Image (cartoon, rainbow, N blue to C red; front, side, top):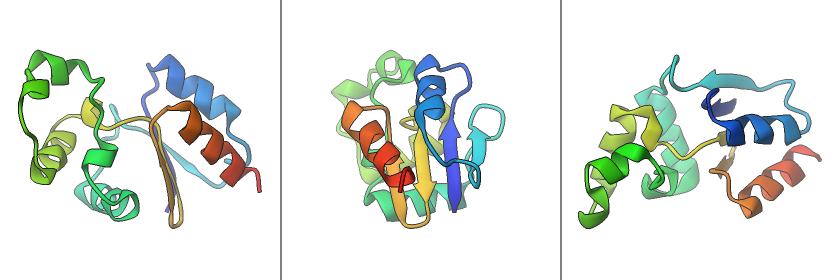
Length: 117
């Protein structure tokens, strides 16, 4: 799989997409208009090692639902990501067996270095 999952209304996602080199062979997936499938999420889980690693605690719904005060399980993370696109940490860059999740400086630099090879 060579896909980049992002949100087009997110300025950070757009900025990161512009910075990524060699993305010609990638499929860009705007997750609000074309939600991720359970199969895609399962593959992301396999690569990332956990659903928690794919989960965004910055989502407005996370705060609105008071989830920070709840002990979430892997099943909870999976169900929440499947339920609403905002729970997926963005962007998610999948290049074969490599995955880069989120917009931390370290993660973005690693993705740029990986794709720049």
